[in-house]
Image (cartoon, rainbow, N blue to C red):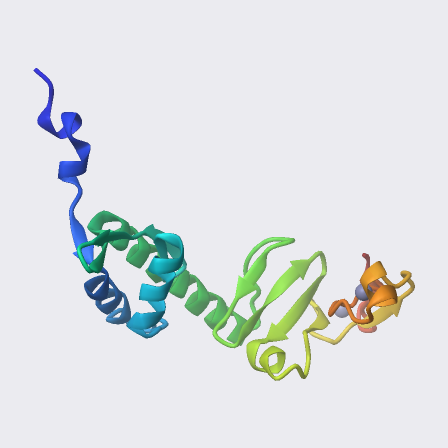
Length: 184
Ligand SMILES: [Zn+2]
Ligand SMILES: [Zn+2]
């Protein structure tokens, strides 16, 4: 005997109207809330919607979009975990504790940092948005801004068009407090 669920797996899948899925996601505390229209356009454009950082397939049923209930639950759980990570990293930072490992990018409620050996490149979302600063290098042990060495040749983008938007000539960072160094 064939298990009916295996014979027709599609019948086992339950769907939720996209509008309801968006409502459930927005009901989560601290969830980013885009307007429903934004999700509908996303579904229309690529047959999928980005719900709280997870791509969920969207299917057109009649005149409205539906999404698999299971995928929504997975997306909501993932969004919850991501928010918890951000909350934990922000709280740790307030106690001057860095989280994550070398090379990892850590997000906080105000921005974040990317770890590079004894240093970190820290940015503020607000400063980036206002194009005031793309971030700064800090020593992890001293919390002092590092001295920057610019000895690399400018990249092709900078030479040909001017402005790659990155600090492409940065060759090294050095802490004036403890003497820690990093070649880049
Ligand atoms: Zn450049
Ligand atoms: Zn230092």
